[in-house]
Image: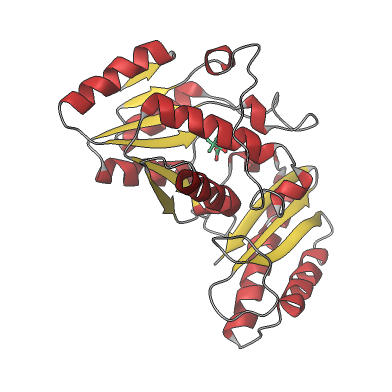
Length: 278
Ligand code: PAF
């Protein structure tokens, strides 16, 4: 497995694969890989002849007061995870390789990016759409793999691929959880022991909401209120949002009659965590 740092080196490799008639899968990541990422890579390996993992902490998706500088990075550890999962190549560019100093072209989207995480992170999805578009152009994959953990991101990417006619299949993969239910995330490393325990309230509250629906509750307002109350039982946790939305359009649902996504973001101490359940 090779680690490639420039677009110039990457392109001929992928072109060579294409000439041989091989299919290419892409797993876009910001590195500091965990079992959730590994599950994406393993799935990509099972469905493609060659797999590229991009490992790039994308500056344009971080807001001014967010954790760009402190975001965890460890390329050696990432390389070991990719190798074990069967990836063929890691694309690990420097920010200067991905963005010109006078870069002024971005990919943005109306509607789907305004609610949920878009409320507190108004420029986040512009950065995500822009870097994913660039990665799609650089790697030209047949399929790209994203986790359901970032449910809004997955819906946004699906919509972008549809609207901009990318000839790429987007594969959504299930959330991978720790044994006690905490959704795996690179940001879990920010939590101290007490916060790590408090963070269990996210999944616990989602399960409570799901159970209410299973028991026949259709009023989304009632369910959201119960989830907020559940989060409030944990002194270290503070809800940023709790929403029940259509999983594809991300439009708010008032009365639950079909598929519904319960999505939430919760501050545990200073760390903002997201989770969701379908
Ligand atoms: O999900 C992530 O890690 C990032 O948002 C992505 C898709 C790699 C774009 O930087």
